[in-house]
Image: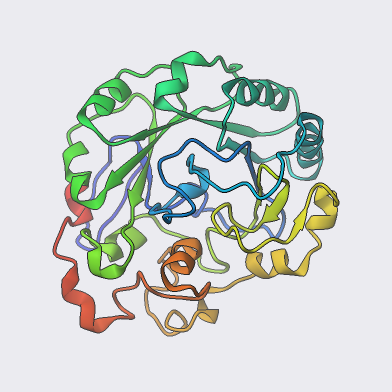
Amino acid sequence: MEVNGNDGAFTKAQNIVTLAKPPWVEREHNGKLERLILQLGSGKGEFSEVEGIPRSIGCIGNNKFILRDASLELERIREVIREFSTISGKDLYLTNYDDLSLLEELSRFSATLPIENVYPVVRLEDFEKISFPTNVKPIVEARYSHKNIKRLQNIEGAYTVLLMIKGEEIWSIKNFSFPCEVYIDVLFPGSLRKVDFDLMEAKRTFKAHNKFHPCLSGTLAITAEGFALPCPLLRNFVVGSVRELSLKQILRKRRLKRSWKLRKEEIEGCKLCPFSSTCHDCRALEYYASGDIMGLEYCPLDHPSRHNVQKGFMYKKLI
């Protein structure tokens, strides 16, 4: 994939298809349900809801959440997946697994339905313990380390690697090659003051469509307890529950439609910004950092007095 920086210096990266943002941000929202992110448990990830989730694309990563109710029964999960296949049938993410056998079973079940893309998310340390049908696309999640990079360079059967990495470490992978696609999941610190990489390059390296918010539009997440959310990380923004409602009923909820129709110009500080049409941001990260769903904690242009805090890695060095 070709990525272009301000100076045109970017060339073809080693299978890196997305950096600091979900893989769907380049698509134009069609106004309908496009993807279902189904969480299958509280999660085994190292990034917890209590301590904050320093993730750029933690929406498809395996975080650690607090369950506020009992998990959905297997049959109800199947019903939700079956209904999704009749409504959209485009992208299904199975993530936040507690039980590998459940992830395997639901992957096989989903593969029998008319769903275009089934993405089971599995940790690198568990990947060899599980068997997936050939028509699903496993996403293997790993934290950056020399040991894990070596394993990932020889991995077989993975559709994508979701590589969690600190900004200061990104330069380390520029000479590595991977046998599959790579999503770079940049770990964000708690505030702009601690950012150690070039935020504007991270936001602009991969073009986002410019009509609706490129991350939220078309997205629906269902937690392990059955709560429906506009984003897996916006845990306080419940729009309904599949224990009580069907997916079709949830899709009619005004709160969900509002998140899908959110435009960048509605965010104070974005509406007059010359980069708003190409910049992708994460509303969940902004909410956790500022307490405001419309916040701009991670925008250096909105904080001119803090422009000099970013003295670290420039993304053009990645290529």
